[in-house]
Length: 211
Image (cartoon, rainbow, N blue to C red; front, top):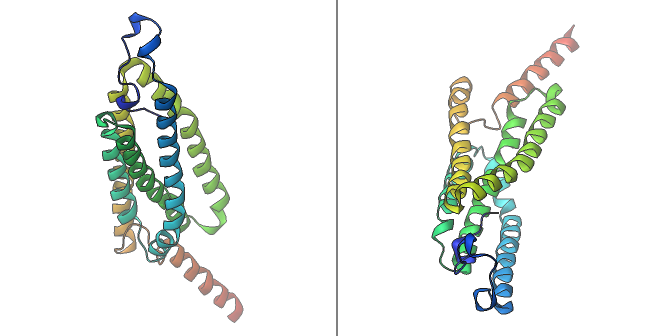
């Protein structure tokens, strides 16, 4: 996780050596920072769970890109503002915004997958989706750490925001040909490819029964 300069304020240059005495944050200050960060992460989890029924209802109504694109763009904006946070609480607010918006948008790809994949290929599709997610969970922090060590927090936050905004634009680009193929809708709607496949299956069953 990239920390705001608010968490590092007052640090001497690296060449100055280890921090000593009054240069080091006191135990109370460290505790306040840790508590604030913990509360922010806890708030993301609790509020995400509270919003889950609403998110599921919107997804059932066909919301796809309307959740994913604004969510990831808002998350990218919050990430870009990380270095501008002047207090732990400001950083915590930005962290909550980024976590909630990205978490809500992150539910969309799996739903789109269920919309467009043939029922006989669910296992392979889900396996690929989970594997790419696991790779991102491993390579993402390593890459971000290299950027943070080599270029600093501002560039690291910029890299985070670029990934978030880029994913929204990629999904938006993929949704356009899908909308044209399905005849409208917000990306892949519940009555999209899955509905067509179900209709074909029903017609095939009817034909087999009639013969």
